Length: 269
Image 1 (cartoon, one colour):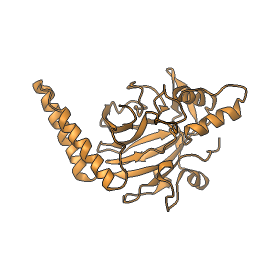
Image 2: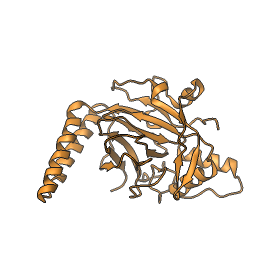
Image 3: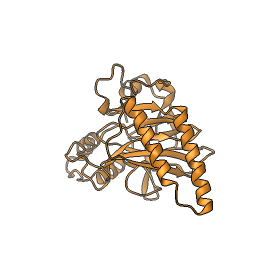
Image 4: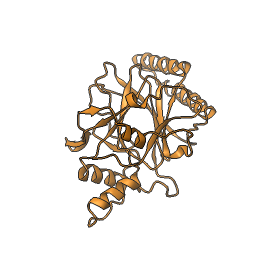
C-alpha cells in the first residue's frame, strides 16, 4: 500500500549529523501477526523518491512538534553513561544500592543539554534506561510496562488516542541509542488521528476504539498491508517523537551487543 502523508522526520535545528535519508530510512513489506502481537515483515528496501517526499520534512522546519526530530548526544555525555553503567555493575556485585542518584544526575545533564539546543524535555519527564537482548526482533519503546512483544503505541494504551486533550495523555517523548552500535526504530508513519481515519475509511460500519492501545491493535489487525518504516539511529543518536502519537518498536536488527536505549516519557508522574 502507498504510504499516506503523516509524521515526517528531520534533523533537529542546532544539531549537525548526517541526514542522508535515502540510507537512513527503509520501507517494509507490511505487518504480520505473531505470538499475540504484531511485527514487521522481514523484507526491507530503500525508499523511492515519492516515499522520501512523504517521510522527510524539508527545511525550514515550520512546526517542530509535528516532526520526528533527530539529534545527537555529545561524546562526554555518552562517556558518562558508560561510567554510570560500570559503577552500577560494581555496586550490584558489592550488594550496594547507591546507583540511582548518579543516573538522575546524568538524566539532568542530558536534559540541560537538550534544553540548550532548544529541544527541551517536558518538566517532570520520566527517564528509563532499558537494556534488552539484541537477538529479539523488537524491543520496547512503550509505556505499558511489558518488556517484550510487538509493535505498540507511544501513547499509554489505557489513555485516549486524542492526545491533544487536556491534560496531556501519558506518552513517549523520545528515545536515545546509548549503545556503541547502530540500531533502528520501526514506526507506522501515521499519527493516531490518521490511524483512526484510515480504520474508518476501510471499515465505516465499525465504531472507532476509544483508547490508544485499542486503536493501535485495530489498525495493525485491519491494515496488515500498510508499510512500516525503519529509521536507523547511530551510536548516541536519538529522536524526539512527533506529537500525535504513533505505533513503534525498537528494531535491533542483529546487533552483537545488548540493545541500550534511554526512553523519555511525559505525563507519567
